[in-house]
Length: 51
Image 1 (cartoon, rainbow, N blue to C red):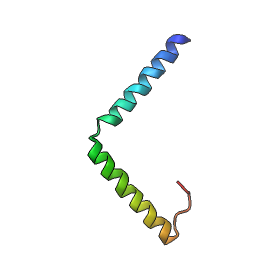
Image 2: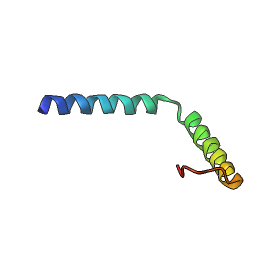
Image 3: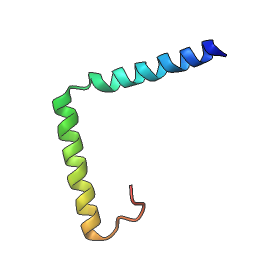
Image 4: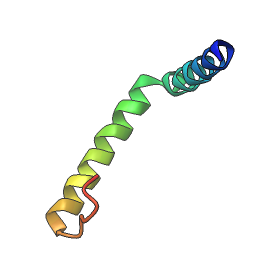
């Protein structure tokens, strides 16, 4: 049981590290553009799922 928890934890850390390996600058730009896009969708009124 404890072994399974450790394996799951290792897997989650590996996934986080993979995400962090994306250069921070690109990640920042992506987040910014995505935010603008979502604001634009809200303004047009076809933003239904509220994510």
